[in-house]
Amino acid sequence: MKLRNLNTSVRKLGPAIAAAALMAGGAGNASAEQVSLELAFECPFPLIGTQPIRAQISADIPPVATVGQPTPQFQVDAITVVNDDARTGLKLVNSETLEGVATSINEIVTVNRTFEQIVKLDIPPTNIPSETGEFNVPAAGTAPEVLFTDDDIGEAEIRVGSLSLDLIARTANGDIAPAPIGEITTDCVQLPGQDNLLQTVLVEGDTVEAPRINVGVEELAFGNVQAGLAATQTVTISNTGNSELGINGISIGGTDSTVFTQTNSCTTIAPSASCDVDVTFAPSTEGTRNATLTIQSTDAETPSVDVGLTGRGVLAPVPEIGVNPESIDLGRILLGESASAEVTVSNSGNAALQIDSIALEGANAADFTQSTDCTTVAAGESCAVQVAFTAASVGVSNANLVIRSSDSENPEIQVPVTAEAYEQTGNPTLELLLGLEGSTLIKATGGTLPLTGSIATLLDLASGTFEADLDVEPTSGNFSIKLLFSKIHASANVEFEQAEVTTGSLVDGKLTANSHLYVKVPKVAIKLFGLPVKIGGGEECQTSQPVDIQLTSVEGSNFSPATGGTVSGVYELPALENCGLLTSLLNQFMTGPGNTIDLELTPEE
Image (tube, rainbow, N blue to C red; front, side, top):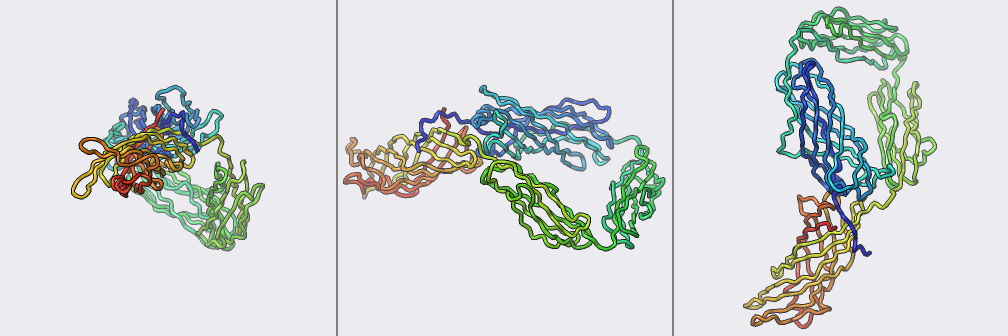
């Protein structure tokens, strides 16, 4: 393989986008205040490892909020400044547009508690310019409302937290760009030492005294209850207001109200206090029953609250099957690769559920496989079914996972299953030409050889593996060894010849490479009376076997195809041969274990 004379310009494949979503809060009559912030993050990306990004965020956030009044939702805008290195990296894999979703997890810190706010921002399809320079990627979303309580009265801080990015780069025809750049999911970390305070909000107490009813549930579902027996559940009524709440009445109405009863001791509820209502379902026949529990109070805003009641009378204990999820989409899968998902089969009934059969049926059932140990599922228990797909031919495959059981109401449940097999289009490789500069220390004598040259690399973007041609320029160095009671000083000309292609990998910013080179010594001279005298070397003077050099990127550093990086290694220099009468003396100068090499690799235009 010959990879030299490449016309490549390598830049970061880097973090093409990031955005931060921020909480927006305020009081009913408070005027919004324009706030903005710029923060730096680090995001791990495939192939090139962790990279920095910069996000500019702006929002209108009122500086005052009132207890009990939800803060209004506000539009949040974020602009990410994408550098030219990232732009060039995306263009190298033919990306034309970028889109996705940014999720921000922010903190709201009050005097007594800290809670999270999760905000999603949509990143619309954004053109990646062909011109050199930075470009902006916009994102926008809506911050959800926040409800402050009496415990929050005082100053509350809104602080920007971490980011999660789901990005898609597309080519000109709308296809997803080659892996691993086409679809990226990464969790970004905010760099330490930054002021991430966006806004300080003054939380004021609600000066109006009023009761506020809160009922913990919207529905009571009793499930299966055997006819002639009864089941009881509890509804808790709380007063979240700042004055006494009066309970005016509690009743049960609706079509099947006679099979439900309630008991309670609720009359008045002090602020922050509660009382319980016990509801009993006692069916006498089989069938599904529905009713409504109605609670009337002195809460002027919510004078009446309804709680739905449902239950099913059965003549004997019965199983009740459930599946989660109710459908499976395994997504797009590259030819030759596989994907799988799990379906949980549960029994919410009061008798054991017998699984009669589990099978894949439908037009493309043969494209999928399933495995399970589901036989008998006890009441309240569950089991799992594994569904797998291996992409064998391009196209969409559809089937149904059919589960047949002893549930008389649902004897057969079908879970739709779909997957799409696709073939990698284009050539997901990247050609790199890296210049090298550094040195190697020959341990036997302590002498150092300066090194220069280049390495022409063909990088497989999907796997992160590469093959390369290594070209190291001829060099020379000075050495000295002890011989009896004196030192001999010598100079040597050294050349390198590639024995085979260099191989390695670049994954998440960590480079490893394995090179095999013959080391040649065409000339060695010692100084006698201040004059150089040739003592060996020649056209045939070289190591008896190739030198095996293992190089890795320096621990704690990040190697990028766009900016390069530092690599180092330790190797053994085999014995020299065909170097003349003083070959054994030359081997004292040159060969042996423990030699070190340090190189700086830099992209060349």
